[in-house]
Length: 228
Ligand code: ADP
Ligand code: ZN
Image (tube, rainbow, N blue to C red; front, side):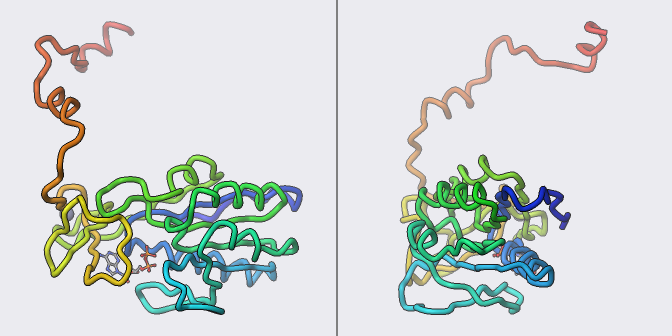
């Protein structure tokens, strides 16, 4: 992973986003950056959005490979704002896709007042739609790294979160966030991602795509010469 070259002194900070499908190594990368900030003797606060409040107090970010760092569970952007200390130089937030849109303002304000803010979260939900505040975070961040996992079906780079219920692809109509369900997830590529029984809402767009235009303007290699 390339290192961030954004060190412009202590006067203002910046936002780094680590995104991608589940199992792509976002938590690993977040922890790597946190450890390096600790080696640099920075004051670091680590948060992890938690959907259920059973985990009060100190929690932990752990990667699918088992390593971990301590993290404080947060349930909302206000929670982050309240827990953020003025002297903290580096903030890290994992699972940021579960937080409300207010997190965009909170991380922007933290960066404005000089902090380096690292957020990690999955980019799309199980339907392939941008997840919570992540799209806006990608837009406002100084740095974005989009990681890929390995498609468990074909072995190519994976970019989609496949939801399975009882081992079968879950229908598109299910809720985006399902707490405590019997579901599981797999990393898959676009081609292997399965989303059954979608009630197509954008039929006019689909119809337009299916019908080939009568007289399309198609660029060829020769088009290059005409303008030379
Ligand atoms: P994320 O935070 O993006 O969900 P993690 O950092 O928790 O990812 O886990 C990444 C680790 O998951 C990888 O280093 C690898 O050991 C493991 N892993 C399990 N399944 C896959 C997969 N399909 N593709 C890539 N890595 C996988
Ligand atoms: Zn695949």
